[in-house]
Image 1 (cartoon, rainbow, N blue to C red):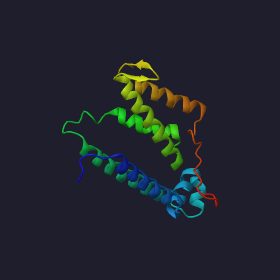
Image 2: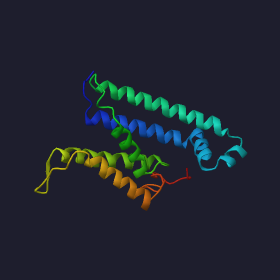
Image 3: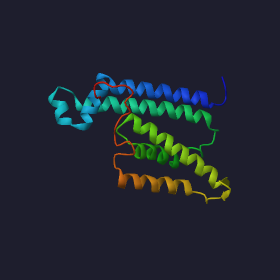
Image 4: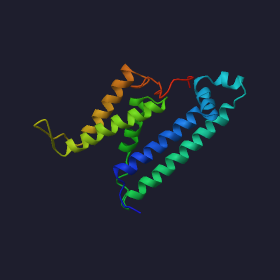
Length: 174
């Protein structure tokens, strides 16, 4: 087994997760979960158990978060300095900036915040951009991502995608 993950493996893993999330969102269970989020009273009226749907969603998300954490901690050295609150904050920023109510929003937020966070991490150690030397103080990336998140919450509370899904083909609305 390789000790590092390359771009190809990471992209393939991300694609698999996106396809599974897309399929789940269009399935009967995904529609029931969305109905319990949007209008719990209407969901109860058609016979859906709001408690059961939310329990299943919470359990699945906890399982996936635990799996992701287990895979991530495998890459870390024995000391846990690399597991910190900033990682939780960046993950939350991805959802807020992209839009938490859509798969497309999560993908857009993850790409945008990851790119910005990666560049700012490099800039904190000193880098050049268009001939200008940039050397940001430590912690700047968290401040900038936080300010961007606040700006998105003020100007576009539903995120950059506005809660809309990307449509690959015409058909019924999901």
